[in-house]
Length: 140
Image 1 (tube, one colour):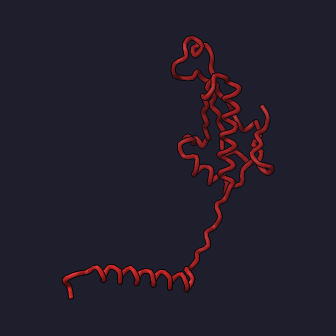
Image 2 (image 1 turned 180 degrees about the horizontal axis):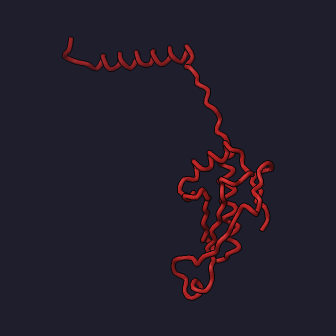
Image 3 (image 1 turned 90 degrees about the horizontal axis):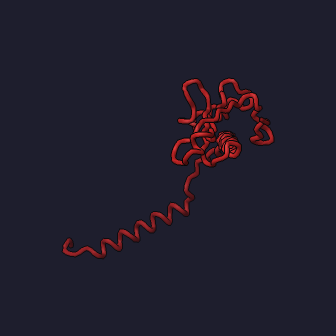
């Protein structure tokens, strides 16, 4: 198996990834009983040197249910009837998860409404109030 290219700066070495193939569940006749097409990809995050610490922390937080007690990221794929295709799909899912963890959200800059925006809001409020007061009857 070859290294997984996530971005130009991040490459997960093949030695850090381990694979197991198991029998897929569900209907399928005799073929299902003979072949193991479901693929499980395991990546030990704690020992990995391919990610910066901040990205690893974001990945652990985002992965949630995909991480087991030992700190392994586990991705299962049984989408197709081909073990090779499932292996490639699992690799793509892992790469997508890592890319999402590497993408830092922009820091929000707090802004204040302009003086004109405040004036428009208050004028609209005043107009609305006068409209409602004009509809009142019997309170004079």
